[in-house]
Length: 294
Length: 79
Image 1: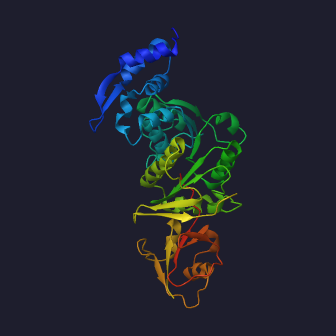
Image 2: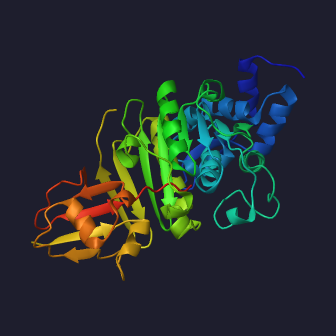
Image 3: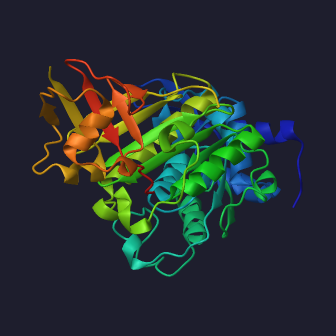
C-alpha cells in the first residue's frame, strides 16, 4: 500500500464528498463510511484518520450529520483529536463507552479485568448472550468497532493500578469513572491528579446516582467519601442493599459523558466542587456545594 | 421549629414508610444539630458520609434552624 501526501489525500476526500443537507435543511458536504473506509484501505490508513482529514476540510462524516449543530463541525474535528480513558467496562463503563463512540471521541483507552457473568445482564450495556463469559474489554472493543470504526481503541484486560497509569493513560485528555467501589475510585482520582488529567466521577445505587467532575487539585471525592476512606463491608453498601437496575447507570453515564464533552470542547459549566445527585424515582436532580481545594 | 429531612438510597430503610417526594418532616423541640437528627431517626453515624443543609455540605455539629432542608447520604459506590 502506498502512503500518499496529506494534500493528495485531502484532495481525494474532497472528490469523494458530496453535497447534502442536515435535518434542518442546511447544506453540508458529507462522506459516507463506506467510501471513507475504501479510501482508508487503499492508503493503509485508519477510518479515524480519514474522518479526521474530512473534518479538517469541513466535510462531515455522514455518521455525525445528526450531531449538527449541537456539536459543530469544528467541534467534531476537535473531538476526533481527543483521547478518553474509561476505567471499568461494566454498568457505567459500558454505557459511557458506547456514548463516547457514537459522539465521535477520537480514541478510547478501556481498562477492566473482568469477564461478564449473568448478574451483569440486568444493567451492563455490553453484556448479552454472546458476551457472557468473555472479557468485558473484548466486548467493548467489538462494540466500538461495530458502532463507530472511526474510533481508535486500546484495551487492557487488567485491574487499574496507579503504578502502570503513566504508561496506560499516556496522552489521555479525560478519565471517566466506571468503577464499582470507593477505594479504587480514590486511587483513580489520585492517579488523575498525578497525571494532571480531569476526572469525571459517577456512582450508582438503586434508582439514584451521583456525578462530579474533578480537576487536578480539587478535593473531589475526599469531600464525598472523607479524607481517609476505608473499604466498606461489601454486603452493607447501598448498592448491595438496593441493587443496581439498568436505569441509573444509563442516566449517570450520560451525565458523565456530557461532562467529558464540556471538558473536551471547553464549553459550558462543569459540575466541579459540587455533587450532582439524581433520584430517578422522584425525578429530582440536585446539586450540592462541596469544598474546593485539596 | 420545623425541618425537612431527605434520605438517600439505603438510609431510607431506617424510616418506615419513607416518602422520597416529601422526605421526613420533623418538629424538633430538642434537636439542635445534624447529629441530633441522625440519632432521632435511628441512623447509625457511620452509615452517613455526607450531610447537607440547604444544599451545602456541613459537619454533624452544624446547628439546624427553622425551615432547614437536610439531606443525608451514605457512601454510594456502585458502577
